[in-house]
Length: 502
Image 1: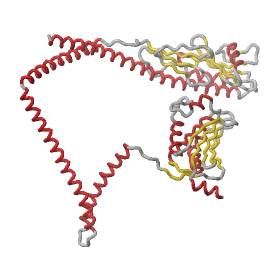
Image 2 (image 1 turned 120 degrees about the vertical axis):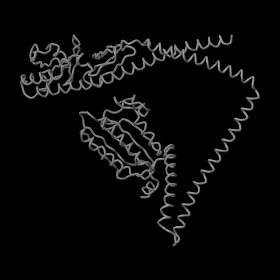
Image 3 (image 1 turned 90 degrees about the horizontal axis):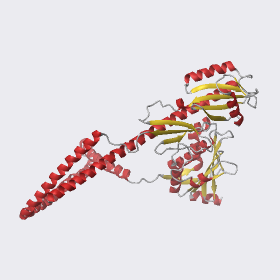
Image 4 (image 1 turned 90 degrees about the vertical axis):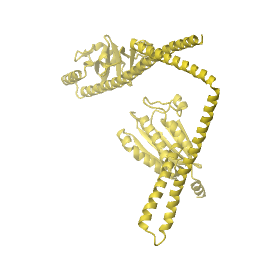
């Protein structure tokens, strides 16, 4: 009876294990498929973003060519357009439409002039307009401002299927959909799909990857057979082990005295092991102590005039060197696993700001941005870790350069160094667009970022570093536009008292 109950329990456990194995396979397959779809989507997203940027470059080049003469050099534009279409198959048509005629006339006969004219009229200045056409086509329209009014319009006709074509094979069952994001129109995003907006200000596109694979894929027959065989063998083994255990327990009950003798013998062996370990530790301690003692005695012997200096110096120095080396290794390990304290020193904020400007000078120059240090002549001194504080100012200045990048107005980042009462203040001021209300509230939260590829850890780390030196970091919008990030640190007491006395 007991044997039948045991085998029934093993059978139920085997069935449960078989079901869990199948579920684990399906879950793992589903996770892998989702990861593959995500990776393929990100790769294709980067590729399409690069292609979209090329469209902007083509329109800019053609616009410059149209603006070169009046009337527009149609023959030259046609040659350049033919070259672009040949090397970029996704661009199926390039046209120039004369908006000054009534009705507007196409110069290259590659697009509907009425549609191009309609989009061009809605364009502000030289802004780019996008429009979806029949047959999975995308129309890009840009005005060429030849006379300040722009009576020419440039048009690119893009094949959306070729634009979203992948250079790498997609996961099995994956389907690609690239569509224009129209304002006020909701876009349906299927569950379990990859969806992301293309990083372009001129061509609002959304990439969606879906898959026809089932949400819970069934394991193949081979896996089912293998899992069944393994579980059956495991069940048989468990049955044999339980049977052997029952037999052992029965034998143990019949030999209580023998079991007690075995326990006593085991206790004796454990006691012997303890004594042996103690002896080994004692024997190892003695030679290590002797090494250190001999090294110290050898150094004292070196002071005697009749000692063999070369032999004793070499031997004892080797002993001492190895002992010190062991201590150094232990010290490095101890420092590695423990928190290291910052190297606090006196830091000149004006000098540190100048070093940051020197580090970012090339970046600022290439971006056409003015980066400079403005001080009130006080040259405040603070106590901080120079490397960490320099990293804070570097991050703030680099954020300022990124904030003014691409702006048509004057681009400048100014690092102001001064004092307020007993504090030293370093402020990084930029001429960018400033901070939105949402950003001001969550600016220093970890993982919050306004950058497309940002991680949201830079400002949070800056706050932590400044607080280590008893300082504060704050941000606000400047009255004249732009943002201001202010680092406030306590000045060195001697400097504050000296200035007060003067």
